[in-house]
Structures are given as structure tokens and as C-alpha cells.
Length: 132
Image (tube, rainbow, N blue to C red; front, side, top):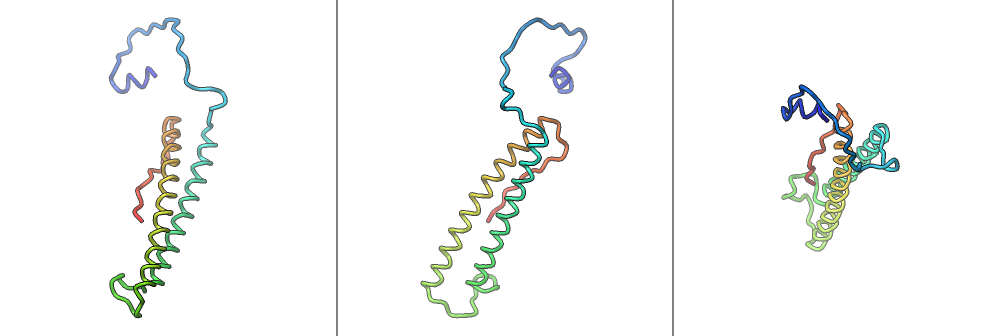
């Protein structure tokens, strides 16, 4: 702790005196998380995010199937308004579901990154916001 304060320029170290003050710790032996465990969890979350992105790609392909592979404003076929509304509702529901899943996984990944950073990890993944 003193080294960190010194690096931040908060203290100068000349003489260091310690007293016998005891502070209550905010940890327990049941709550210890090891780096390897965090890295495994991180890998699982990254895999889950990849699966979610694959699902998003499938939704995009479904959208292309419904509307064609054009810009989304022109259609090759004549669709009834009922069919278009149905496809649009289905696509919007899937997008919302995928967005919620991605946000949950990114939050968990962010927590793991913070813990790894506190442990002195050097390779951190910085989650980005994905707009679906």
C-alpha cells in the first residue's frame, strides 16, 4: 500500500513507523478467488459472448431472409403488411433478448477484469458496447 501511495506522490518515505493498530479485514477464506479461476470464468464469458454474437448473426440472416439482402428499404417480392409486421416483431424480440444477454455477460466480464487488474494482470479485455 505504501508503495502505491509513494508512486502516486501521496507520501514521501523517509522513516516508517508502524503501530499495533488492527483493522478488520473485508475478506474471508471462503471468498478467495484465484487468478486461474478468474481466467477460466473470463474464458467462459468470452465464449458465451461469441455464442450470443453468432445468434445475432442468425437473427440478421433471418432479417435478410424476410426482407431480402438489399438495403432494407427495397423488396424483391410483394409482402403483405401482416407478414412484414410479424417478421419485424420477431426480429425486434430477438434483438432485445440478445442485447440483454450481451449486457449481462459484459457486466460479468468487467467484474473479472477489475479483479484481474487488482491482482496485477497484464492482459485485460476491455469490453465494448455492442449495438444490435
